[in-house]
Image 1 (cartoon, helix red, strand yellow):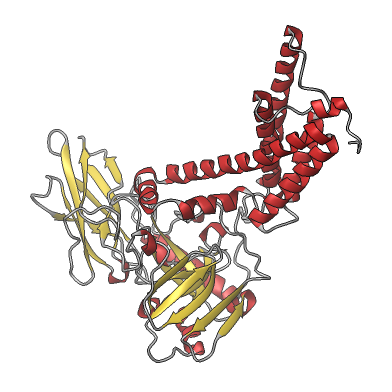
Image 2: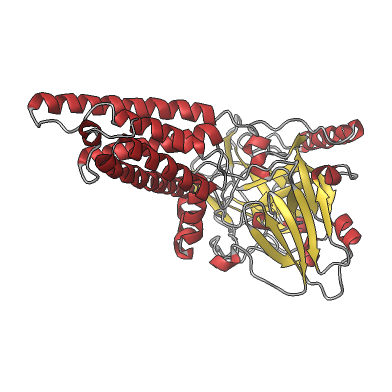
Length: 508
């Protein structure tokens, strides 16, 4: 890197419109993105994270709904790949600008442009100047290597072969460096939640007793989960592919709005309060009728009512808005939050990052979208207001729909067929599950697991029968604790959650 460029140094950089220029710029950009992941890991300071957020925010509501209902997890992956491609393209443009300056002013100008352009763009996207160096450093190194040997040959066959080989070597080098960056980035914390350490031993004993209760209550049916979903198997649905990484030392929860005394709680201040341990089931409003985005866990946290009483809710307050670290927000009736929990533990572990570490809200009997993760603020309101998903056409802030799902089909040794699944009706509870093996003409009661000690939970069900000849249609429906039967008419998830009787064709 010399201040006075030589002619050879200038000609080392390809023209910005040449195939070699575009390919090399892409390789340099890929190294920059890989370097960002190596330094930041799967956190919001990874340069693709803010691009992914922007993609989601700008996506038209019909496209977003199609992605949720039809593509599911594949849609999330495609969205992330689009964000990745856009990030590579953005840093590729920075590199091309560096190449153009390098051709005119020499290597130092190219490196300076790539460094300041790459670092500046990364810092602007992530708001993290230090981790932005993870982008700039490999881009500068790669740009310097481009200048080491000229790329513009005289056009003879030997030169073309030599350049092709060097291009292959560069591609292999970038692939290897990217693989190493992935391994380095994957080292980031929050992978395995530690055991709860913020509550006394007596509370640990309560957690164990309640988990033992669930294990002893679960039906032994192959093909369906027990009454407590393992932490690693509990479903996750979020607006962004990369979850917030919150430092508890900096985290606070504010309670503001129509209250007599505004509160600001630290993590230690919240977790030092007397905890409650509750089984709570969550169901995603966007899941198919017989989908698998419904799970149950034992949550540890602080009752919301305690904080509302301490703050003093003002007369005329009707709604509450919950806000999250990732700018997600939900607004719903204040009465729905009564009896809720601010959870910081899950199945005897600290709340995992993917489930809202350090604190999330649990709103009794409501769709999963209302149970805001990475909670940072509770604002009590005297008016109704729209929420994140309501602004995109969904109506998922109400109580969950009653559902009985059929997930297990077992052929028993005695020739019978056993079917089973879970049923859930929010805080209304599940009174019964009925099964029809002839397409809905006749019905029989299924066996239900005994209810757990908390109200907002699912129940398992199973039913064994002698199959008729040939393929047949099995239908299942639930009745909630108020005596209201699950409606028969099938409704898609959009806009108010899937409902209807689950029907499955089974071969003998």
